[in-house]
Length: 177
Image (cartoon, rainbow, N blue to C red; front, side, top):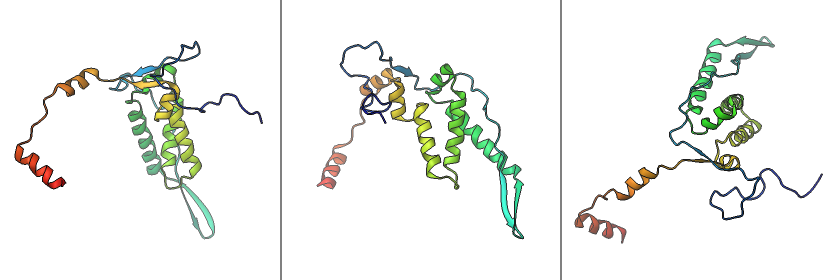
């Protein structure tokens, strides 16, 4: 096995404000809108997973299709799919054509949260979240950041603070002592 050399996730995460020389191979940071993706939500590209009720009767394994459970799982997938496409990261998913990767994450996430899940499914879902930029380390590795509401921050700074009466301030001091 070779040793040394660069590894995909080795070292500290990229720092937006680092002072260093310009490098031609450094990607620029992408600013994602805080209000989220406003485009059309693509159709969920994966087929429905059939759910079966499996049980034993007279020492025989019985496997019956469960239409209600299949429909419930599909509704869960579609609901999470719509929620995912309201996130700021969806701007880049649409731009890069990552609908299948996001759909695979939706399915993996739901599988990882089921009662029959194992640690492998949970780990896979976490890794997929990073790969599509849902986790903070994933966003850093992709060099995505959220936009800042500078006007809102200025508004908050200039807003007058509610003053408390002297009696309230003295009560707070007495309670703290």
